[in-house]
Structures are given as C-alpha cells and as structure tokens.
Length: 264
Ligand SMILES: CC(C)(COP(=O)(O)OP(=O)(O)OC[C@H]1O[C@@H](n2cnc3c(N)ncnc32)[C@H](O)[C@@H]1OP(=O)(O)O)[C@@H](O)C(=O)NCCC(=O)NCCS
Image (spheres, rainbow, N blue to C red):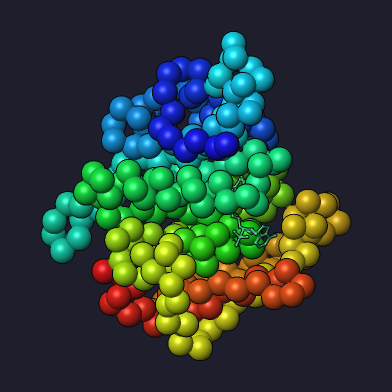
C-alpha cells in the first residue's frame, strides 16, 4: 500500500534529501539541503511524500525509511494583467528506482494539484529536460501540462548524472490546474488533438547517448537541433500541446496554436 501525503518532521525531510542524492547523484554544490525543504513547507510550498507501508512495517524503528517518492514545490508570485498572482514552482519530483512506472509520479503530481487548488492556487510550473522522453510523456500526455518557453542552459553546469554533461536546457511546463483540458485529461476523457503543426522528435537512443562518452556528441547534436526548433516555434506563438511515443520508444512533441480552453 502506498500513502501519498505531506511530509512531517525532520526524519521525513532527511529521507527526501537522501532520495534526491540517490536519484540525481548530486554533489554538495547542487544538492537542496534539508533546511530548504523545511522552508518550502513553512512559506506555502509543498513537500509531499509517497510512503510504502510494507517498508514501514519492516522498519518500525525508522518509519521515514518508507519514503519512496517525493515532490517539492516553492511558492511564487507572477504579475498578470497588473495583478499579483500566487503560483507554485515544482522544483523536484523523484520516485525510487524500484517503485517507478506504477503511477506514483502521477499520484504525487495529483496531490500537489489537490493541495494547490484547496488553497486557491490555480497554476503550477516546473522545468524539465526536453530530451527526457519519459518526463515529457508524464508531464504533457498524462498530466496535461503545456509548454511555451525554452530556457538555454538554465542551471549552468550540473553534477546530475541524468544530465550526461550536456547544457542544462529546460522546457517550462505550465499546469493550469483547474482548466477544463487538464480536468478532462486527469479524468481520462478525450481532449481535442493538437492541430497538426510542428513536430519535434527525440530518438529513443537518447538515453544511451547521454549515458556514454561515445554517444555524448550525438546527444548534444539532438539537443542543439531541437533547441532551435523549439525556440522558433515558441517565437511564432506555438505551444507544446501533445506528446506521443511511437512503437520504437521515440518521443514526439506536438505543437500547435494555443486556444483559450488550454489556459482557463
Ligand atoms: C520522473 C519520475 C518521477 C516518474 O515517476 P514514476 O512513478 O515512474 O511515474 P508514473 O509511473 O506515474 O508515470 C510514468 C509514465 O511514463 C511511462 N514511461 C516509462 N518509461 C518511459 C519511457 N522510456 N518513455 C516514455 N514513457 C515512459 C510509464 O509507462 C508511465 O506511463 P503510463 O502510466 O501511461 O504507463 C521518475 O521516473 C524519476 O524519479 N525519475 C528521475 C528523476 C526525474 O527525472 N524527475 C523529474 C524531473 S524533476
């Protein structure tokens, strides 16, 4: 049984920090420390955990060991039409290796959304690596986030092993939490397919290429080519509205003009 709930106490926050290091392999210059998790909780952000009750039962003296996933978000303010609006920036989502692909990542995001809406917050944003096919699929196809912005080398150099030494380019996902489109996608109801327009491909081999010295040049070439395509499409007012995987595991971003229902 998995419980999804807000983290409590220092031990659970320390378990988030440990899972963060296990997931990204960060060195001490990149790691988000326990104090920042604590602050996020105190200032209107979120630290939400996924807890496995079997692991808890096997470790009665250390219940925080049962943390198998977490989502961290920070509060932000945006000025829209001259008015300040609170929103959340989701900075990290991690699920322990052996617990992946069972829906926990999506459940953590749903709990972030539920908590945000309960507090009157209607927008959540986060950045993700455009080369990560799985994350794009989760963010766009499963959750209904849209993308209208590209950030070149957003974090500068990163010690993350998932980055493979490439520039930290990021897409900016926007999750309009109570839009009819997001609600329909989360309910499993059909939404209008994006008008056929620009399509941007990420080859399935990207994971291998990023992970090896020999493949890095090819991964960089894909990153640079796609960077140009995203920048051009966004400058023309297009948005990423869909993402599909083909039989070989390649990922395809589908871009089209943004309609009002995508935002409301
Ligand atoms: C991203 C992450 C949090 C997702 O957690 P998760 O619990 O595995 O996610 P879910 O099971 O809810 O959803 C994953 C979806 O991607 C699909 N998927 C798995 N591997 C995939 C791949 N190589 N390509 C495309 N989709 C893939 C799964 O089938 C699932 O979709 P489905 O529910 O339709 O079957 C987890 O993989 C992780 O911790 N990754 C490392 C850290 C990271 O990249 N975090 C996000 C950026 S901050």
